[in-house]
Length: 211
Image (cartoon, rainbow, N blue to C red; front, side, top):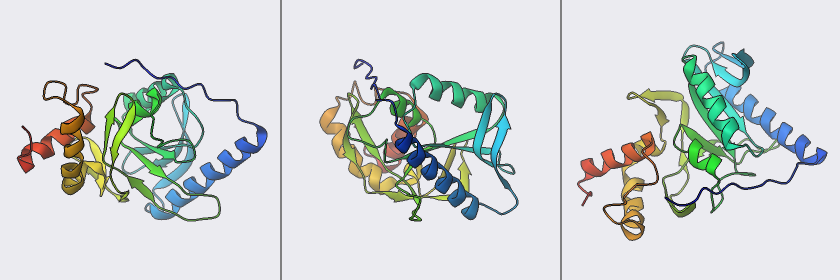
């Protein structure tokens, strides 16, 4: 296993904090506008944390992350919601995340329902996912952006959404070219046994691509 990469983020200045706050609010408002009316609340206290967006009927918490986040905080927050019976969805802003090289935090978050947005406070953009292959903390393959629909959650049994990486046979097939290039059969997906890896392997069996 490769050594864990822990990026040391520089402290944010006040201007950067204001930008992150504006992005955070814009994403909250966007989710509020697309999810069923009357079923969603913002800033809902749950245990020792406050859910950015809570879809009460489905018991789904959306956590929005625009600024850097430590691995410890990501793990603690994820476990806290899950222990209380809530499914957790992470939304990462591309101002900070989805770079060529991943941090340990993003590696962990991508084992969960985790998606991206490039939304700004002035533009209304959607949310997207991607199929990717990661080798030694670097993306060696990234698919085209996959548009997802948060109004259509799927549970089989883990949470996913219509259009995301767990439901993309064609893009997974393209990704396997890179998997076979960078991984031996013995080390295939040795970097983690997450639901993501299991989902890809399940698709491999269905497509008869597994060697």
